[in-house]
Image 1 (cartoon, rainbow, N blue to C red):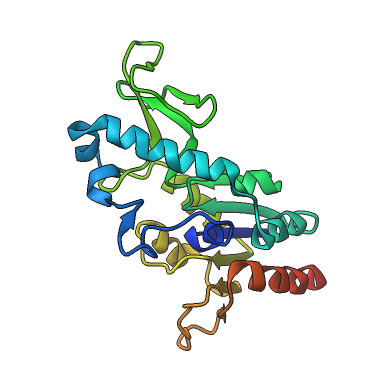
Image 2: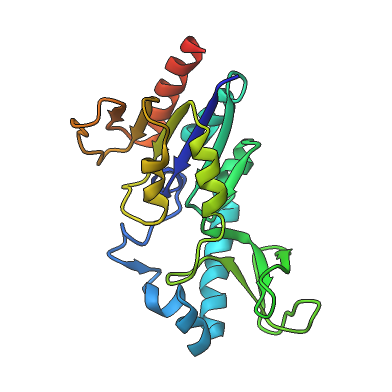
Length: 229
């Protein structure tokens, strides 16, 4: 069974009603990212950061997968599909994808501020000030903030290097290091980029741009790949 590796970004979640900070002019719910999504923000005002992610978690829990997510689940019947996502929601899992790698963390989890290996499921949508890990330190959102290392990148590189087909969906390929995965794809394998803002990529014959949204473009692409399986 051939291996399909998918890199998904905020565009696929936006169609399910989860806003992106880029589309909101650099703001998330009225907050500059430096106020809520950096280690410095946590040091300065941890309660604000907790509240911000609580609201995002609540919204993500209420969101439902769209046709872009669901089409990837259908593809698993014909290919070994690995989803590498920049998104922190669980919409891929909610749709039924069985192999999902979260590069930037997961809203539904918290972790110790003392030991990053102590990770827990958040009970419901609210992570409260005063909730601690087993070693007694405050829990923080299990999110990779701006300025922090992306620990799952090595796993992602390994998956991409073994791909037979590579799909990029819902991302502008402007956020690094995730965008760099495109350059680790084995030479000569087909690459499909599904996004309305996709440039032409005329200089790369391996890339097929599909200038549609995830919910429009992915079902069409999946139907094509199933025929080729």
